Image (cartoon, rainbow, N blue to C red; front, side):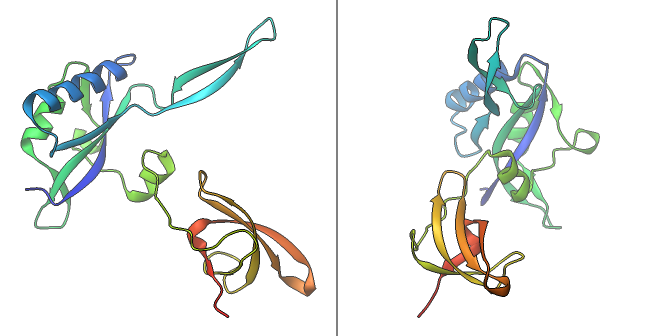
Length: 186
């Protein structure tokens, strides 16, 4: 059985993204493949359009038209490369509207963790053990080694604003990711 899961990108006919995602989800339910095909997503964003009459209208738009993301259980080959099961490949590849997997010569290549985070497909949950007003140490980035006071925490965007007394006694507001700081020990 698979001991890990990775995101893959499948190419579809343009305009068929939602139909492909729905078809794959129905196949998963009907064939009991929940342990092999874990998730299916069509990345979208909400965009505010301004019409000719100056009114605004929010529209959901596909970020990558013609593509669907699938999270598949994988095993690893002798070289340590992630590999989906033959059954999973067959089911997805033969779903109506799917043209191929994204990868060299249509060989499926999983997305890296960095790519998954940048696409916003999965969010990392970070436990924050500090709050506004606490002194924290910066552990990463250009201000590594400096200390500062937390001014604002934005959990939704994975950001924290810290006031750092940096150069020549000047205070500077720095925006960092939540995991780039840790509570200062007294």
